[in-house]
Length: 204
Image (cartoon, rainbow, N blue to C red; front, side):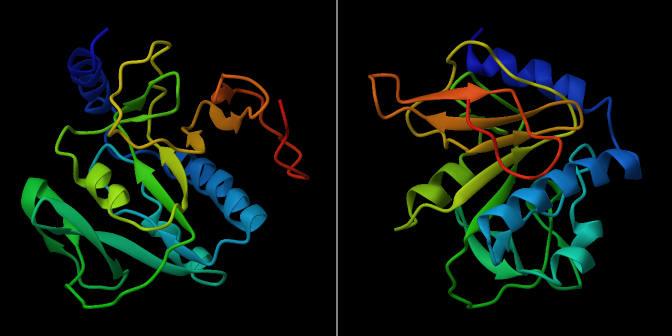
C-alpha cells in the first residue's frame, strides 16, 4: 500500500478515537517516562495534541520534576523549539502552541506524534513535512519516540529517504523498538518484545 493510501486509512481510524481515556493516555505516558529515565534524558520535546492524539501534556507536572519540557513551534515550513508554558494559542491546522521565544537549546529526546509507521520504524505524518525538515536541520541526533492512539504499523516499506526514523513506537496496545544490527547488511529491525518488568530495555 502506498504511503498516501496508508495515511488516509489511518486518519479515518484516528478520527474515530478522539479524547482518549485517562487510562490510555497514562499507559502511553508511563512507557515514555520509563524510556526517558532509562536513557537519562533531561531535555524533552513533547507535543500539544490534536483531538485524536495522546495527551502527554496533562502529565507535564510529573515530567517536569525530572526534565525540562519543550514543544514544537511552527516557523515557515519547519519547526523550532520553544519552552512549554501557558497560555496556548491556536495556530494553523488547529494546532495549539505557546508564545514564540528565541530560546536555543539541544534536546536529548523527542516524543513525536504519528499517523503510522512502516516496517523500518519510519514515520508517516500528516504529509506537511514539518518534523522531517526540523530533524534534518539538526546537527545532532536525539532519541525519538513515536506515539499515537491506535496501532498503525505497515509491514511494508512505504516511506521515503527524508522520512524520519525513530527508536521507539508506543501506542496503548503495543510497544516496539528498533535494534541496529552492525554485523550484517541489515541495518535495523523492529523488535516487538518489550520488558514489562522495567529492569532493562531488552535485546532481541
